[in-house]
Amino acid sequence: MGLDKTQGRVYPPKPRDVYLYATCLVDQFAPEAGMDTILLLEREGIRVHYPESQTCCGQPAYSSGYPDEARAVASRQLTIFPEPWPVVVPSGSCAAMMRHHYPQLFAADPLLLARSQALAERIFELTEFLVHVVNFKQPDYGSDCTIALHTSCHARREMGSHETSVALLDSLAQVTVVQQARIEECCGFGGTFAMRYPEISEAIVSDKVAAIQATSAERVVSADCGCLFNITGRAARLDEIAQLDTPSLAGEHIASFLLRRTSKATL
Picture 1 (cartoon, rainbow, N blue to C red):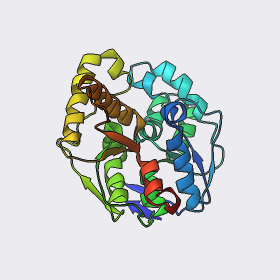
Picture 2 (cartoon, helix red, strand yellow):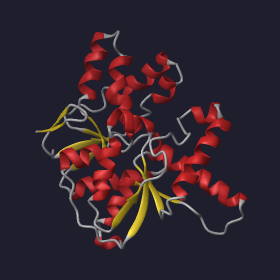
Picture 3 (cartoon, one colour):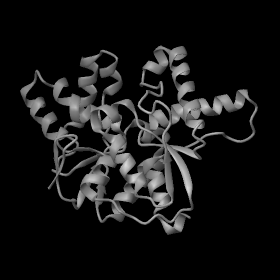
Picture 4 (cartoon, helix red, strand yellow):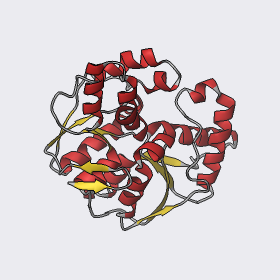
C-alpha cells in the first residue's frame, strides 16, 4: 500500500473491481465523461460496476443549510455499494461530500455513522485513484498542445485534486499546462450559490474566464463538470455578446482529455 502524505491516506493496491459513482451532472449533462472514466479504468484491467439506483450525493441541500433533506438523499447511497470495492467519483466536489461530510451528517445515528464511515474510506476522486492506486502511465499520442487546468474549491481544499490532476497532465509528453492568474480562486459556480447570487457568480466567473484566456491556452481541463460548465458557458455568452463566430474557450473533463490523448484510435 502507498501512503499519500498530503492527505494522510493509505492507498490499496490496484483492485480488480470498482464502483462508479457518476454524479448528477455527469449522468444528466456529460455522460461522455462517465463513459470515458469507465474506458480509462477498463483499459487498466479494472471491472467497473455502476449501481443504477444511485442518486444525488446530497451536497446541494447540505451546503444550503438543509441537513435533514441532505440526510434523506445521502442515506440512499449508503447501501448501494455492498461489495468492499473502491468507489470512484469523477468529481472532487461530490467525492469530498461523501468522504468527509457523510460521517458528520450521520454523526447522531450510530448505525448510519458506521455505514457512512465505512463508505467514506472507499471513496476516491478519479484523479486521486488514477495516480495513487492505478499508477496511471500511458503514452501521449497527441500533438503539442497548451491547456489550462481548473480544479474546484472542494477538490482543491478537501481532496488535493489539484496535485493529482497536475501529475496526470504532466505525464503527457506533448501537453503543456499553463498556470492562470489566481488559479486557486473559485469559478463562481458553487452549486446553488450561482442561483442565489447570480450577479456575484457572474462577476467571479467572468474574471476566471479572462484569467484563463490570458494564458492563450487552447482549452480548459477540469475534473469537475460544474466548474467546467460554468466557465465554458460564460465564455460562450461573452462570445455571443462580442458576436464571435467561433468559441474562444473550449473545455473538457479530464477523463475525456486523458482518454483522447492516450488512445491511438481517437487521434
